[in-house]
Amino acid sequence: MDADGSRRQGPAAGRRRDGCGGHVHRDSGRGRPVTVVDIDAARVERDPERLLAWAVLRRLVEASRTDVVRLLWPDGDAAAPARVTRLVEMLRQGDSTLPAGLQGLTAEKTAQITQQAEADLQWARLNRWRLITPDDPEWPTRRLEESFGTTGDMDGPVLSGGAVPGESGDTPGVRSRAARPFALWGRGPAELASTVERSVALVGTRSSTTYGNRTTHRFAGELAGAGYTVVSGGAVGIDTAAHRGALEGSGATVAVAASGPGEIYPRSNEDLFRRIAQTGLVVTEYPPKTRPARYRFLTRNRLVAGLTRGTVLLAAGHRSGAVNTANWADVMLRPVMVLPGPVDRAEYVGCHKRIRDGAGTLVTSVAEIREIIEPIGSVDPDQQLDLQFAASPVQLLSRDQLAVFDACGIATDDTGHLDQIAAEIGLPMAAVVRTVGELEGTGLVVRDGDRWVKNDR
Image 1 (cartoon, rainbow, N blue to C red):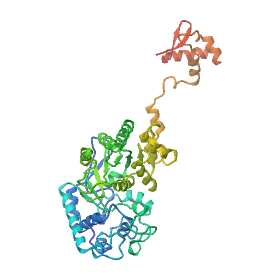
Image 2 (cartoon, rainbow, N blue to C red; image 1 turned 180 degrees about the vertical axis):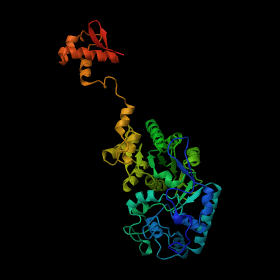
Image 3 (cartoon, rainbow, N blue to C red; image 1 turned 30 degrees about the vertical axis):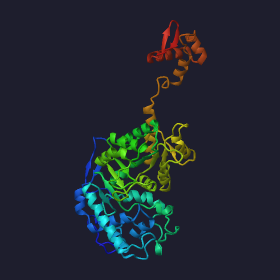
Image 4 (cartoon, rainbow, N blue to C red; image 1 turned 135 degrees about the horizontal axis):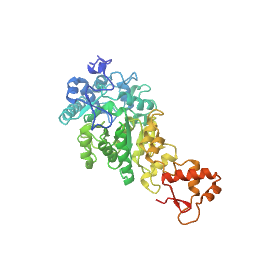
């Protein structure tokens, strides 16, 4: 039994936060293993009463609210069983102590919402979606606690009548909007908790440039190859490049949608969402058939930031919604990394402002991203630069060799005689002769009569 007197789901009693009773699958031999959910087996194990209660609450509450979170976990421990059946019963009874906006439900309205919730679960079963809740082993408790614990969404009591300290009326303040999710609809074989445990958000504007799309695609592929899950919002532009880069890198990717299951947005990405759901995961807070709206995109952004270790801003104009995701990462004390772009492109005004204001770390490679989000010393970006930009033969010369090389002549002058070289650099003649021989061996200089000249290859 739960603390609220409701029956506790069996598997949750000893639930593992790093698995889901599924199996491990490695895609194409690259990246890290992906834990796959056995959806049919999970359905058999779940408590139908609690599952319906979660679906009812998911219908009643838009996204999430701090007052609802505090009622679900009054002791502030998100790892404890949530009092979801008790909360739903309070709603049905019209309890006067409920938060504003959750009071005044009539018996007719309550019955209608319950029927909608039952229909949601039935639709989900037919269309391979599932409602992921804190009762499930795949619920990402640790990742959410690390992110939302910094926002204080469980701090303080819910006052009589539903007021939250620091807020008033029915208009949620910033703290309400920062509430952690309490249930997510998901479609795809990937197990949520393990998939986002090692993840990075790649976000940016819809009106992206060729440079932005190309760089995002490359970053996503390299992150996937390094075992990272790429999380983004499924929009056109940077989001699309991020998801495609991860898929083509045979890695895991998660799309956090701002619409409900069965409501694909944007329509142009229907095939992309299908591909993500085949190997990764599509998740959303909104019930089936919920249409997208501007405020839902902004609310969704907190999940993109909250499910990941850090957020990379790859293109953002002055008023880009992607900056909102970076702002959420700031609130959650998650690192924000920023790709610089052309100074004359409007698509990078937001990026450059964050760099200028010290609100993001400039990054130009995946090695630099990993240096920030991984333990100190585990990644050496300078070594990666050495591999990418190998030194030229001249740059590998010793000090004496470089001095002799610089004193050698060119084809169109009359310098490069041994006595001229010795006089110019101040080395003994024997040292000059030996060094010229070394340079000849590398092919950097050649003999031209009694002169030594640089080999213009």
